[in-house]
Image (tube, rainbow, N blue to C red; front, side):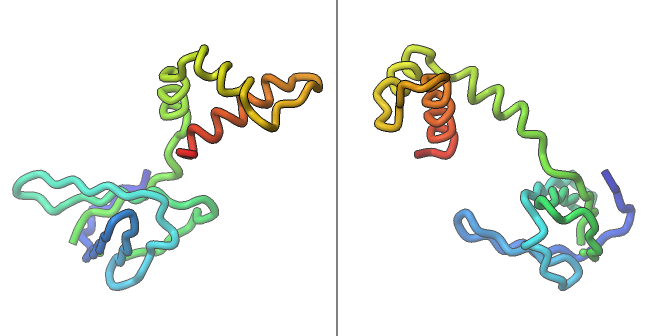
Length: 122
């Protein structure tokens, strides 16, 4: 993680699930997958910016310390999601799927499809 000692001008405009982010007057929202703002009393805010996939080099400028991190690790969130799954509910839902066939590994494919739908909120 690159931690700059310089303080930069940062503007975040958020409305609902959408946000625009400018650092030193340059729009960078298309390059950002996530951001976090922290501030300790008496210090400038610190903005942690997670780059979107495909954006490994970024040149920014901003009144916060800006740190750039790679994409967040999905492992912990996936583990938490899977730990909350009721196996009986998963099996019941998979067996009731209209796309369940009788081929090899059909139940496994149906369970994975069901988990993907649940994970995406469908």
